[in-house]
Amino acid sequence: MSFRQVLMMILLGGCLRASAQGGFIVHFNDLQAGRSGAGISVREVPDGYLAFCHQYSHDGTGKLHVFTRRLDQEGTVQGELEYTYGDNRHYDIGYIDALADGNDGSFLASVPEGWGYGDTTFIYRFDASGNRIFRLPFLVYPAEDSVNRAIRQSRATMDDGYVLGGFWQQPGDVQAFLIRLNAQCDTLWTRRIGLASQNEVILGLDQYTDGGFVLTGYRQATSIFNSSFLIRTDANGNPIWTRYYGGYATQNGSVKVTADGGIVTWSNYREPSWPSEYSQVMLTKWNAVGDIVWQKESHYGFNVGARDFEVLPDGSFIGVAFSAAAGLNGMLCKFSPQGDSLWTRGYQVAHGPHYLNDVTLTSDGGFVCTGEANRMMPIDAPNFQQSQTIYVVKTDSLGCVVPGCHTVGVQEYALDMNQYLSIAPNPVAAGQPLRIRFEPPPTFTPNGPLRVVLLDATGRRVHEEQMRGTTCNLAASNLATGLHYLHLTDGTRWLAGAKVVVE
Image 1 (spheres, rainbow, N blue to C red):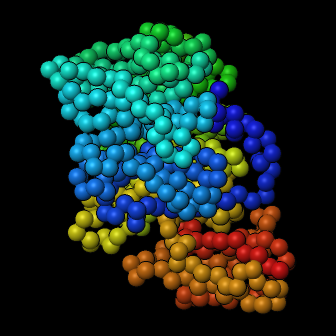
Image 2: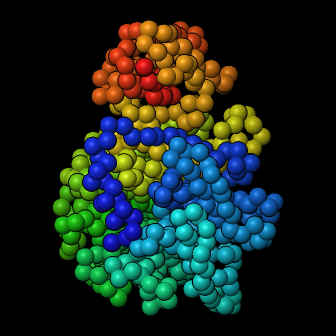
Image 3: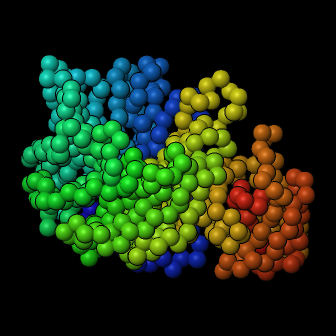
């Protein structure tokens, strides 16, 4: 069991009953200074959160480098580190939640330094502040061998070692690639799995209860039916069985082993008769011999895809995905232990496509996610389509940035609108007016009349009114003393919110 899992078990015992959980939506637009990037993994650490990203370097070389950024509990960035400034090579850090959690609170990732033949892939270990404390070469091939390889995901094993999965490639030969490391990161063995003609790539993996592994990914062979795969191996990486699934979907997301020995995949599904680019996400539970126990499809629409997911302590599931059903939203999706959809929250950016790549359970029972989105800039800016901003979303256990969002009748959340909301005075004395002002930029267009909704600390709606113009005044004399939650919506989206205290 990893350090993070132990920490969650200890903290969740006393925190799930908390009446209020903090939340935020932040982006690194100013820090990136016009350089594209993506959030790959995010973790809760003492005093806040640590985001692992890749981004084009600040050094002007035009190369993709690895970044860590520390945030406090309110989402304020406390510092960043770049690996390695001034290096004229590309670095990378994986795809869907690339980090393995060490049992000592550290984090491990595979990082290729350079993308050409003959370049070396290293193991990096980071501490809770984002400092690199360990760097070890582990995949080295001579340039004349023409070997390309990439690690998509890393996971800790039960013996404090690690397992890593991705692909191995020579011209005309692409296979799934599995690597086993011990606790000192020495390579114990490597395995190339699958037929080269099918071009198989591992995207997600987990260790099974018997010490073996479960792997999920996709086949790149042209026009192939059921291109997603699930492979169970023994402890030495030798395949026991393989299952193909997903219909005509192109890629899938992740795999987890449940407490009862089940195997759950979070993936895509598509029928051949559906319009081009339409698909669903699909949550499937398999037993130890590869039979389907249950399979649930949901969220049908244009350009829908699954990324990371987690199994929660009560056996339910939380996943991140994306959908173009109403703009291309990064989605947080909750499912019952039987795979039934319970709720979905979409975190919407002002312009263009955006994705969430990782979701992590936090010690207050909520969630923290990271991903990428089109940068916060006017849609007619010269480099609008060339720049991606990294963002982090912290929610409560119901996917709300401000508690009570699920009661105001919307499921989509606008990014970075809170900076345009002001509430004064706060705290407010009973009997005094509470002045609310919302002044978004000229490019903002509401999807309907603005509404102010006020909830008390128990989540009960105590006041609601339409906001006319940019301001409104609430009479605090009509409110009981104590904590309240203010929500501003436009009929389809949650735009902004805050805690309000009446004294």
